[in-house]
Length: 202
Image 1 (tube, rainbow, N blue to C red):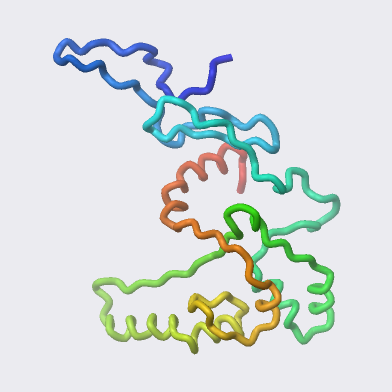
Image 2 (image 1 turned 90 degrees about the horizontal axis):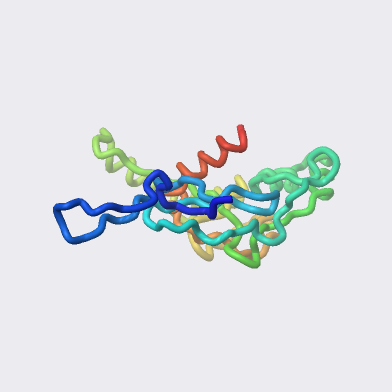
């Protein structure tokens, strides 16, 4: 079996060009090319970075990751916290009872932290009412508006240390949040899409 590599195997040797003293660099596989496919449910793919000729070291799924789902329907699910908070704060007895039967797990607390969705907004350079739009965005980032999002819609405020009146959010405590820059997610989106396509994820 051929060892995993990011070298372009169609060109195993480099030849002198006849026009210069330097040997041409190794041809490498494009960024995002799978150089080592997963070998089991707890293995992950490794990808070429478009620069190095060697395949990255073999990595594995983070410890504690579920590799076989629980028996039964919806024993485990991934959800935003505000859906749970709506049940827990509901005035309907059946919804409050449903929330009481649920257990909450905040993943990756021993490593990089739990993923937190973010919301962003901007103003187009040709917006006809630019000043009003800027004021509206400033209002959305204000203490009053962020308190509304937290207390009324069960969302985490973007204003640090903002006092809120939401016992369900407070009940989550001070958990570790993922600090990964969203730009990194954007750069890795093509490689992620290739993984989805390969496994047939819809």
